[in-house]
Length: 176
View 1 (tube, rainbow, N blue to C red):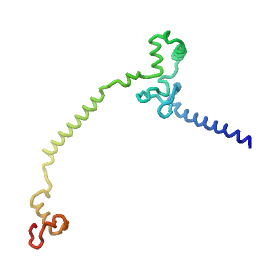
View 2: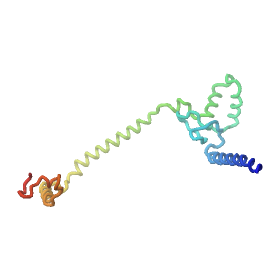
View 3: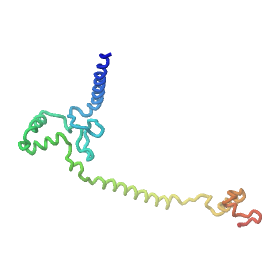
View 4: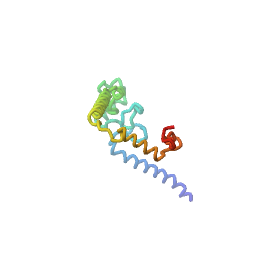
């Protein structure tokens, strides 16, 4: 009994490690050999530049011999690094600076312009349709047809409580 009790935690630990490895292997194909440096939105190792989560879970680029040498040099004094080396280190970890991906782009003008053109085309189509294609009115709009429909509704006593037939006197055949 003592042997079984001590084996349970080890089995549970092995199961959780296997579960973690299988979960990590599923995203390994997407992230490649890039270094996992943190926890992202939902714990998955993905790279996205977004202001809500400014520190992605993985580095932007996969390690190269040059970047590994720079990473070793980074461990020392930063004053010994040149500006180009600092930029290279930054670009290894991030695709864009915070200012670059927050930068205002004029793409909204294209969307607004297309929307205005669509509204103008719809207005022109409506004018064309009402001027040239919508000239024919149904026969039921003619006055004699409307009078015939009214007589028929009175004859059938449509809505006799509060409607049209309640305002018609059937004894004198006149409106009340």
